[in-house]
Amino acid sequence: MVRSVAVTVLICLSSVGSLGVAAQQQGDVRRVSLTAGRSTVLMTDYDITRIAITDPAIADAVVVQAREVLIDGKAAGTVSLIIWGTNERRQYDVVVDPGVSTLEQRLQALFPGEDIRVNTNGDAVILSGKVSSNQIALRAAEIATASATKLKVVNLLQLPGGAGSQQVMLQVRFAEVSRRALRELGVSLFTSPTGIENTVGRVTTQQFAAPGFQNFEVTKESGKFGSDVVSAKGEFTFGDFLNLFLFSEKYDIGAMVRALKGRGLLQSLAEPNLIAYNGQEASFLAGGEIPIPVVSGLSNTVSVDYKEYGIRLNFRPTVAGDTIRLHVKPEVSTLDFPNGILLSGFRIPALATRRAETEVELRDGQSFAIAGLLNNMSQDDVNEQPGLAKLPIIGHLFRSRAERAEQTELLVLITPQLVRPLNPDEVPPLPTLQQRFLKRGDDVGSKLEGGGGVVDAPDKKAAK
Image (cartoon, rainbow, N blue to C red; front, side, top):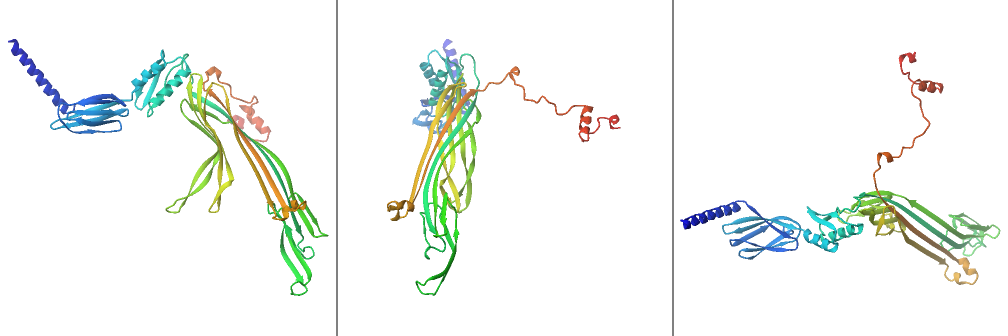
């Protein structure tokens, strides 16, 4: 009797098992979990004829034997895996974990005694818990960013004393100083338009402006070569008298001398203020845009692109308590016409750019300076008449020189401050004038009528 009961139970269990298999075949989805960078083997109870997976970039599957499938986890996410047999078909949800459990173990090993927890939410890795110092919070975020390269790291680690402000105001001061020195020396010799003994001449190196001649009229005794000149006249043309101008009407000879020495000093200052949220980037630009024509190769049409220039600042703060880590990139660019290009009759200037990129860690209200962005330029131009400039003593009359030296220095002073909202009792009063402009009531009309104005009366009795 006992044996027959046991047989009945086995039969019932077999029936239940067959019903379960039928349910799985009709749409029951199984779950397979693994970690990114790891593999697992999925066993089936039937021979596999075909498999399909939705996204091989998240997980890939390969049939290694008739009833074994090797699944490789590649990136965080969930994909569907369908396996076909001769008379079977099953579907699986392959869930790939980004390996945050390994990251949490690593952080606990590196920072023993710290309460650091790691969670995932979609495409983000969230660090939570409490740490004892700013340095540990920043280092934990750096390790998480390096471990989960394709995921965004959200740092919610709390410091002793509660959470501070998550907004940073950056006070920036750009100071640019330019020093310039110039020295020029040159001589141009010339005769009058009628010449000396019927000979007109001019000596110049063309480095500086020289006089010209026009409207020549000469009358000779005859048309023969070498006949005497009866009368001659002409006109001077001057583009610049330079520094010194001498002309002798008696001897019909003159000279223009360029002797100049100059010094200059230029200083410019910009003081932008920027506010950025923790981990977000903010930018500032004080300058303009220059149009640049761009010619397409196929249709030969010309389009215009704009290039920004001026004083630019990009920064990204990372806040940990009262410590602020800044990624700062200041840049100063100016138009450089001498090094520009000429395109279709248009002068397109180049850009002279000075930039720096650095990271610094400061506390609230501390400042740091970026200096040493120097730009030195020296130019020396010499023009001379070949042969004549080599003559002793008088050779200097056939030579001209221009020397130019310029030095530009840029200083950037940056002060980050945590933004804290004001309490109602801390709001400062608005600036107002103590003197009232107009009085209310009938005094307004009487005051304005006395001054010759016209005002509507407030009621009928006043109008009468």
